[in-house]
Image (tube, rainbow, N blue to C red):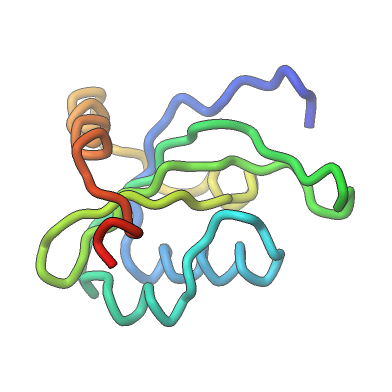
Length: 124
């Protein structure tokens, strides 16, 4: 992946099953930013909607076998309806096929929620 490649300019909307798969994949690849899948299963709303906002390209120079990936801000909907902020490293091939938010207005609403949400660490 070229160093100057721009970040994707799309916000992704995912369900809890997709979130769990992405967290598990990040864990298997030993990417730096991911949550324990057991925590995700126990705390996320089963029918919840979650959002990925690409923040930066990230690479592991000490692990050339791991491709550059997107470090995304992750807005998680918890079982009680509250939302928390985390980070998640996602491979571009996993990010690209995910559904996008329906409109720019929805994307801006997600940005506002990300800016106001407490982090997972603050909630624990």
